[in-house]
Amino acid sequence: MNQARQNERPRVVIIGAGFAGLTAALRLARQDVEVVVMDRHNYHLFQPLLYQVATAALSPADIAAPIRGIVGRLPNVSVLLDTVTDIDRDQRQVHTLSGRKVAYDWLVVATGATHNYFGNDHWHDFAPGLKRIEDATELRRRILVAFERAEMEEDPERREALMTFVIVGGGPTGVEMAGAVAELTRYTLAKDFRRIKPENTRVLLVDANDRVLRPFPEKLSKKACRSLERMGVEMVLNSRVDGVDENCVRIGEKIIPTETVIWSAGVKASPAGKWLGVETDGSGRVPVDEHLRLESDPRVFVVGDVAAHTNRDGTPTPGLAPAAKQQGRHAASVITAEIRGRELPKPFSYSDRGQLATIGRHSAVVKFGRLRFSGYIAWWFWGAAHIYFLIGFRNRLVVAANWFWSYLTFGRGIRLITGDVQSSKNSKSE
Image (cartoon, rainbow, N blue to C red; front, side):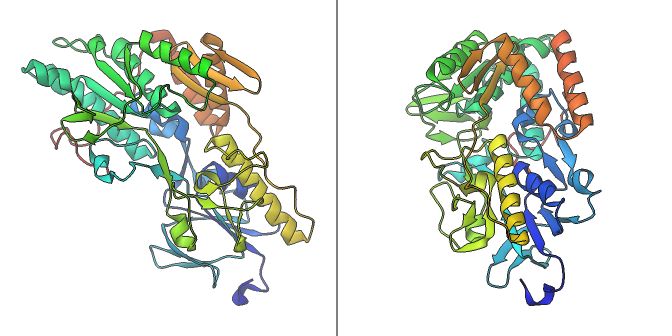
């Protein structure tokens, strides 16, 4: 322990209030330790539903909850709103942007991931991703403003470009986003305009692979592809994006005029490896041992999307919410065992709880153990699972009510354009 804290309770500092970090905090709150949860935001965000904020189905408040509201009543847990700039493992201190030096006895790094443009970070301004509330509200603004401008546009070619939406990346986020944009244009906006027909909007899903949803069985992947095509989504597979600017997307020699591009082609880890002074893999993730600790420092745990962990069967742990929660629980169990002087639990191994993706109304695919199913039943299963994982009774109730209302009316009520509509057409999201 740090010399200045020998007579105090052990302190566990958790960086990041995502699924992994909060799960670890809630588990450690039962122990005789001091827990400090650090995050640059004051809320926990349910990222899997960000696309519904971006397509006007939900409000940001429906999928986020204040961190203090989750852990504020726990007497041994405190919350620190700050941004990490460095970690001094020799002194066991976390350095922050405000100048604080937060001492720790055990450290849990759960700082998640951000967009990966594979060396083309300058594309971000023209093709934002979907990791933060700010990303979702900016995309919602861009999508809705595109239709407003198309309604006033006299040039047919410019109008067509405004009504063309390109989603890059055929993983769950890309598939769900493509389906949601298609639904928004086909059902919700169809009666809102007089000069244009939103139902004729082009929605393109671009992916470098030969099929979407690669982690899913091929049969489910093909069903998802057929569902998207029935909704009018154009599948552009086996194709890599070579360029993006404010007016178009370039795929090989093909140029697609568009002013709205959404990036979901990949993620890279936060700068945790740089803070910790360790080597990372190609996606910036930090290699960990069988108990999710640094090989060189057993007092430091790395969990969630920022951890590069391989299970005993040789498979990598996926970047999913259930995996993050399992890792958070395991880190808390190891710390508890070390504090109590007990034998460590068995090495961490991810228990696959299945994978889900929705394509649109009445359509989803589910891989759950040996079960594989799609369609209407899968859609209800997807909805129930996501409501279950939301934090807070209010959020579950509001999301369920909004979904039920949308189901009955085909409506999306959060069609608010925020920000300066007259600003540059592809302003950088803040």
